[in-house]
Amino acid sequence: MTGLFGTDGVRGRANEYLTPELSIAIARAASSRVSKPGRVIIGRDTRTSGPMLEAALAAGFASAGLDVALAGVIPTPAISFLIKDERAHLGAVISASHNPPEDNGIKLFDRRGMKLSVKEERKIERLVGQDLPPVEAVGGIRPLEAAAARYASFLIGTIDADGVDLSGMTIAVDCAFGATGGIAPHVLRHLGATVVELNTAEDGARINQGCGSTHLDAIRTAVEANDADLGIAFDGDGDRVLLVDRDGETIDGDRMIGIAALHMRKIGSLDPPLVVTTIMSNLGLEETLGRHGIGMIRTPVGDRNVAQAMVERGAKLGGEQSGHIIFSDHSPTGDGILTVVKLLEIAHESGSDITSLAATIELHPQVHRNVPCRAPFEAAGAPQVQAAVREAEAALKGRGRVIVRPSGTQPILRIMVEGEDERTCAEVCSLIEEGIRRLLL
Image (cartoon, rainbow, N blue to C red; front, side, top):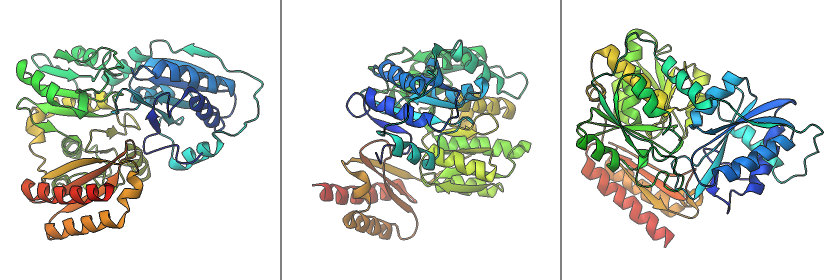
């Protein structure tokens, strides 16, 4: 089987594309990279299909001779922590991240807590569907005790500054009916904040529906209604986060990276003085960092690409505009709750607030559009689409950027236009969108 893995694991309609049979085959194939005896930790988000796929995945691993520890409903980055804490050999998360409830997915992590490389995924793909040799010893399956509590303690322990106290601060938190609902409010209350909870129930039928980091209207309304100092919105599995200030303005991943980079540079912990982002990150971030002697390296879209480049360059900080932020001194993967904790710590140390710190990161206007498309990879390379991109770039007269790329997680083409003013960006973006829609018709 080829083309099984996308930019963030296997993902598709549960029980239609991602079936129990496929899950068992993936688990057995992935087990081939682990010497026996070995251990694997499985976590999941709240989706209705999660327990079904968890049972299948666990059966697949156990039938291949691996002992399985079930962490239950828990954020994706918690598995990265637990792999290292438990000295496990492999980790798996059953989640479709920000996708709708009917989808699900499987993400695999190595013993370092990092997502498997493309090369490793391709090896697994080639084994899926093959008749693998039987294994004599069958692995056991058991719950992993206190997994969520241990992860929460880890998050609180990442605070390096003394006396971080959020007393008097009101924070609205939207957990998207996903995996962060039982942990994020607890961590913030432990730090002294008054927490307004939104969508914290474990409700897989409503995960990401009109809420969370992909739908910020709910958190904006809560911030205004409760006169909150900050709004926090996670996606369904908690590996990304976006913020909303008290005026309802979005603080995206680029601004969060900028806040952290400038502070780390100031206190001498950004060594080497560079950050890793993707091609989607704002040129304004690059310019702001450059003025402070901080370099910026761009990778293809995907937090795995960012993480691998960080390892190669020894970088301490990286992430995506969408809110996947990696603090490599604490975790090798994007972690939404960890990002919030570190930004609140930075605000405390700076004697400021996150809103004021975000205002120091000057960004250029960007306009984003998504166009539904059955075959986004083929459409992105079509001559008509490329011609529309060239026409759009000509309209910007060398004073902007145009990116058209296929989503690696959904059947859509993503358009981004960056320029000197938002009106021009919107006009150029519409030009490309019209060209793509003509092609699709």
